[in-house]
Every structure is written in C-alpha cells, then in structure tokens.
Amino acid sequence: MEKVLSGMRPTGRLHIGHYFGALKNWVKLQDKYECYYFIADWHALTTNFENPENIKELRREMILDWLSVGIDINKATLFVQSKNIFHAELYLLLSMITPIGWLERCPTYKEMKAEITDKDLSGLGFLGYPVLQTADIIMYSAKYVPVGVDQMPHIEISREIVRRFHHLYECDIFVEPEGLLTDVPKLLGLDGRKMSKSYGNAIMLTDDLKHVESEILKMVTDTNRKRKSDPGNPEICPVFDYHKVFSNEDEREFIVDGCKNAKIGCIECKKILIKHLLEFLEPIQVKRSNLEKEIKDVDEFLSESQKKSCTVAEKMMTSVRNALKI
Ligand code: TRP
Ligand code: SF4
Image 1 (tube, protein in one colour):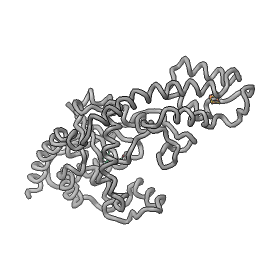
Image 2 (cartoon, helix red, strand yellow):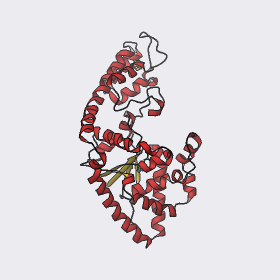
Image 3 (cartoon, helix red, strand yellow):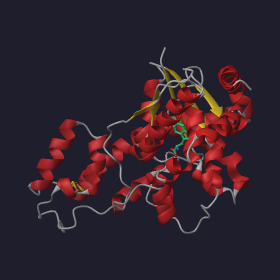
Image 4 (cartoon, protein in one colour):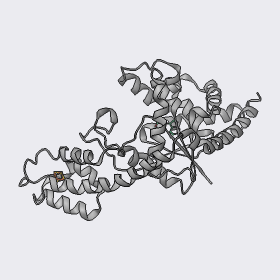
C-alpha cells in the first residue's frame, strides 16, 4: 500500500481552518493509505527555541484535537517527532549533502526572514528546516505528503535531496515524495484576514458554542448593505465564504437570491450559518471532552504507535548506513 505522511507543528488548539485545510483530508486518507501523522515538535523549536517549556502541553492539545475530528490511532500511525531520534540521525546525514544555497533560496525561508522581526531566525536549525522535513518524509517512504501550497517548495527540496543522495551513494532506497494539495475553499478569519489564532479571528474547534454564535453575529457582511432593503452581493461577503463550506446548494441558492434581491436580512443569513457551525462543532466537542477524561497520559496513549514509527525508521536507517558504508 502506498504511504502518506504529514505533520503539524504543535501550536496548541486547532481552528476550523486547520480542519478544512488539512485534517478533514487526513481523516479520509487513513482509509486508503498507510498513513503516518506526527507532531513536528522539533520543527516548532526552529522558530520557538526560546520558549520550549509549554511544548508538552501543546502536544496534548493537538493530539486531542486530531482525535476529536476522527483521526484514528487504529488506522494511522501517530507519533511525536522528538521521541523518534532516528529523525535526528537522518537529518544529520542529509545535512552533509544539502547545499546551503538550496536552503537560502527557499521562498518560505526568505519570506519568514523578511517578515518576522520579533524572533531570532538566524540559527542553523531554522535554515535547515526543510532538511529535517525531508528526513521526516523519506524515513517512511512516503509517496504522498498532504500539505498546503506554502509547503510545496519544501517538498521540492525533499525531491532534490533524494535524487542527490541516490546519485552520490549509487542506491535507490528512498521514495521521491509528492505534495498532495487539497482544493478546499479557503476559510478566512472572522475579519477577512488569514485565519490565525494570533490574529484573534479564528473559530477554534473548542470554542464555546455561545461564543461562536456571537462572533458570527458580529461578523462584517457586504459593507454596502446597510439595511435589509439594500440589495447585497454574496460574492464579496465573508459570511458567504463560510456558507460555501458549511451550507448545501439549496441553502446557498436561497441566500444568493435573498441577498441580491433584498429579501432576507443578514441576521437570517447568519442564523443559517450558525446552525451549521454548531452542528459541526458540537459532536467534536463532546468527543473531545470524553477523550480528555480517557487519555490521562498522551505518551502512554501513543506508545504502541510511537514504537511502530521507530521500528520503521530504524529499518530505514540500516539501509541508509549501509548506503554510506558507515
Ligand atoms: N512544515 C510543516 C508545517 O509547518 C510541518 C511538517 C514538518 C511536515 N515535517 C513535515 C509536514 C513532514 C509534512 C511532512 O505545516
Ligand atoms: Fe452577506 Fe448573507 Fe448579508 Fe448577503 S445576506 S450580505 S451573504 S450576510
């Protein structure tokens, strides 16, 4: 069976953008492929090495969110990167053969260096981010890597590293990975900017339902539509973007017609969205609160799965050491 691998940096609780942009697809993939999903906590350190102290708690929050939306430890192998030290060994060996120019030219690297001013990104770890990511991926012979578009340059670097490794050591032990892009409508934040917890514009999977309702009621709509008698334009309304994700075709037709012809008010339109959002969030939250009680110790919960990841990785590292004759 072909293998799929993806990871997330532990940034704590997840929002609905994470769900529709990634997790929903991860859940689907677990039925079709041999899947590996892991918490990239070393990657989190590349930008956050000054504050490592809450990483354990963040791991727990993220695993609980994964499970609450249907990631299933009986279907996919779930593990923590920092508890599989083979990743560090492969990263080290790959770093020998990766030209620094490849990394300096990487768009994500250049953009983050230019944009982020409140963090020290001058370290080797941050520059080597794509090399560590490559180790994560090729360790498991993953063919498909579901990621967002922003990560595609990293996958390209992975492919180049694989080719260089095979060429240098005259072997063929890795699979050249491919990015798997999901074409989901992008969910913007409540204020129309990119959804992000740090902007305070996200709907978290764990947000109190009453709070979600009031946030939606506060959301800006088509700003030209001041009262119900003014016709509106759903295509420029951020509320309608959400309807594209949450509502069915009939409802969307009803809204487009009602909005353009000034037959429905924005509150009525938002109420439809709120109903869907709450129906979506409630079962996730129920499941999560049960899991919180059941899973006292995440490390213990993951231990079998973690062990499996180490077994696969150790086997790959034997081939790697053989290829290098060390
Ligand atoms: N860089 C990814 C992100 O920020 C996280 C990640 C680390 C990853 N290693 C990976 C994703 C391997 C896919 C495969 O989202
Ligand atoms: Fe937006 Fe709905 Fe109001 Fe139209 S009716 S402007 S789609 S909130």
